[in-house]
Amino acid sequence: MKIQRLNMDNTWFIEFAGLRMLIDPWLFGQEVDFFSWFNTQWHRTAPVPLAEVPDFDLVLITQKYPDHFHQETLKKLQPKLVVGPQSIENQLNKILPDSNILSFNKGIHDIHKKGIHIHHLPSARKIDPIYDALVIENGEQSIFLASHGFTSIDQWQSAFNEYPPVHVMLSPFDHYQLPFFLGGTVAPGIEGLRKLAKSLNPTHIIATHDEDKHAKGLVSKFAKITKAPNYDKLQSFPELKNKILPFTNYKALEI
Image (tube, rainbow, N blue to C red; front, side):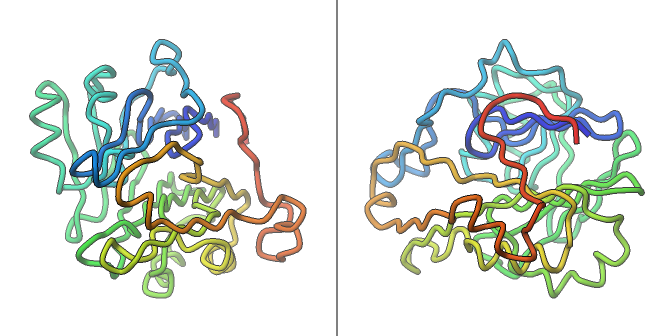
């Protein structure tokens, strides 16, 4: 398995069992949620240039929000195949009319491509499904991807008994809290990470979606972010010990 970080937030290139996936590409410009006065964010560290993005077979969009579903980046990349939430299917068809779009929702959980199975795990959060997760597996090992953490692990525990062992788990380490009227908990922090790691027992754990971005607007005024402890402190937790892979640059890694 080959993994490369492409921005310091949630954009990844993963080559797994011959399938090359680009995850949540946001490689330039801003994220604007609804209105600029409500939430505008942009990268503090420049992402990988578009010209240096590795060749890929598909783009995987994990969430409907523009830091995951960044339309301007997708227009530049012009992917042939996109897998993403059904809630953005119409928008994808509009901006990428020549692309093949495969959608998942609460009723469509499994997508198969080139021997890889992508399983969508809906969370219990119905109005704003940021806690949804994805399992990507080839029958021998799997990748668990939860870009906002996953609080429904107990609900899906029986399913995990059927999936191959988790080789890589990607989940945020920081705790990100908003008032309830703006969405409440956005990322559950270390306690959520530890529970997830204890249940899944992954070989490797990678922090994602924790970039300290520039931000302005209403959301940034209310956001309370608690950064994860340093690496040495994280090693003191048995669920995390000797599992964390720090991706602090854009160098590709074979694991």
